[in-house]
Image 1 (cartoon, rainbow, N blue to C red):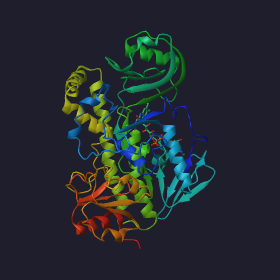
Image 2 (tube, protein in one colour; image 1 turned 45 degrees about the vertical axis):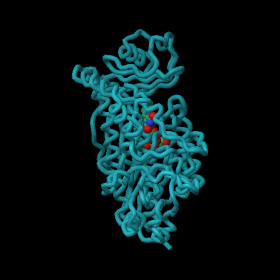
Image 3 (cartoon, protein in one colour; image 1 turned 180 degrees about the vertical axis):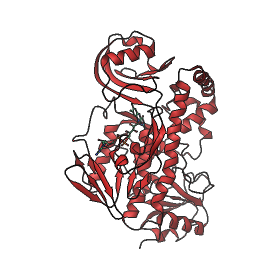
Image 4 (cartoon, helix red, strand yellow; image 1 turned 90 degrees about the vertical axis):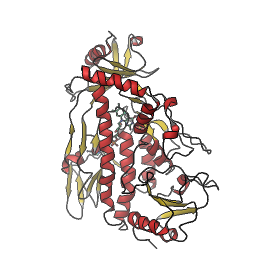
Length: 463
Ligand SMILES: Cc1cc2nc3c(=O)[nH]c(=O)nc-3n(C[C@H](O)[C@H](O)[C@H](O)COP(=O)(O)OP(=O)(O)OC[C@H]3O[C@@H](n4cnc5c(N)ncnc54)[C@H](O)[C@@H]3O)c2cc1C
């Protein structure tokens, strides 16, 4: 792994500025590799999944009590919650520790500046040295050098606003309301008990972002947007962002792949960026690993773009939809009023919750069954074994609640964990095939169908 920063822990990655919300599938993905505990205490007992801290749409808060939990499909109690607040630094530390344990070397202070590939190899250069590999994954953020150097097309929409986040001291902070405040020219966010302020200014993205914003500029924007004469006395850290929403047209070009912000950038509205990036990484990891080991079924790596590009596109649209109702023009304001009414209904809140929490994400795997393509819920057998226990070694799992698979699954024993027995709640399913990324690949009660699905996703059984 090549990483530009010499040291982890920049102020932008630790709390409060680096605070991030992880939702459903990201929380489960970390839990299924034993990586959640350093970020969040995991009890041994199952808890019913309850929407909590479910976020907002365009600054309009959702009330968790208004989510119709019965309308949400395929939910099972789990020891882990629906949402975990953490920081970028904490997530990075957990992942860094894991890759080092797996024998990966992290070379810090190395900036990718050149990428060249042929049919066999990709070479990344930093100006001094060249690093050759069979595959390269660019996870180098929104300004990705790998994306540019490997010639990916990056397309989308230009910004409507400039946003700022700052850690600052105010002479009269009480002038600013706590929480999200939508105003006639934008929105500001003041976190309770903190000096962290976010502000969005509908300037058409006009601010020159090559320089950090000054105290005077931040104060002028904050005064204009909030309609107050609040005084910013000192700025400890400040940065700007926009709602530019761009995505590469593919996530793979030959031997170069992209994941995270390198493949898609969007405004922070709705907290989708990190969650989408973790989803990319989890989807790609096992596909690339089996490709490298030569055991992947034909075409597996190309399912990465096919599955994740639509998820990225939907996340971009989700942030665009919020911008469209926040703009100060009368049409947008009218739409905002209508949406506020809809969010006052149970169905409206439930719909938005499914989008914000990622519960609506379903990869198209070509099956009509509504569970196939979704992250598997944490099934639990009556002997107490959970799906998350079976997945700790990074393989897939075949869960056979009604003993319909017989010795079929045993043929894939080097690629899949097989478990059979009654579940505390099998959701009416006979058997379920779960991929290493936690996504349900198949469900049914026919062993021949199971074998076809196992061949499709895991290839020929490895003896
Ligand atoms: C204010 C704010 C709030 C947000 N809140 C949320 C939230 O609550 N939930 C959520 O899901 N998302 C949120 N996001 C978005 C989220 O932070 C990003 O989507 C996420 O951090 C992207 O992760 P990444 O690993 O793809 O890229 P980055 O975090 O940008 O990491 C890229 C890494 O690559 C390294 N690098 C860059 N260039 C090179 C190079 N040339 N060579 C070598 N190394 C390089 C960098 O040093 C860095 O370590 C928020 C964003 C902002 C700005």
